[in-house]
Image 1 (cartoon, rainbow, N blue to C red):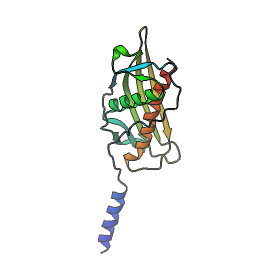
Image 2 (cartoon, rainbow, N blue to C red; image 1 turned 90 degrees about the vertical axis):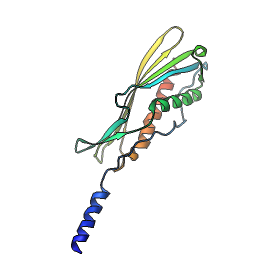
Image 3 (cartoon, rainbow, N blue to C red; image 1 turned 90 degrees about the horizontal axis):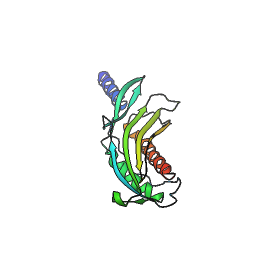
Image 4 (tube, rainbow, N blue to C red; image 1 turned 60 degrees about the vertical axis):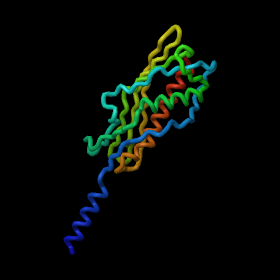
Length: 188
């Protein structure tokens, strides 16, 4: 009986403390753009959004004792999510979404260069850091401008044994990166 109790207690301890690594999902864009508005209702055509990361599945990792313990991954189509989000944010900011390149005053191309989220095991400091790097090219009749955007954020979250606990932060950094692009476009 004593041995049975030890076996059950051991299984309980080891099963309760294991890390549950699941694919991270990206929710639809939270349509709360509050930046500047377009002054002259320019029409924008989104020509392409490409995910140029080498490993499109990996979006970061979990550090335990300063070593990579688990990979964070997602099966989301980030290029599609960015396209959908940009269309919504552009409308809110006063732009017109054009379906034809010939009708648009501005033509936009976006390259997703990097998505990296790192969760560490520190308890009293910011233990989650996220970075999204994008390259945005805007063309009009007379010029082409390419700008790099780097959305970086960090925060403390409670110690976690589930990768899904990182999803709200992923969504927050994603929304902030969309808002940053659209806000900058209003000045163009």
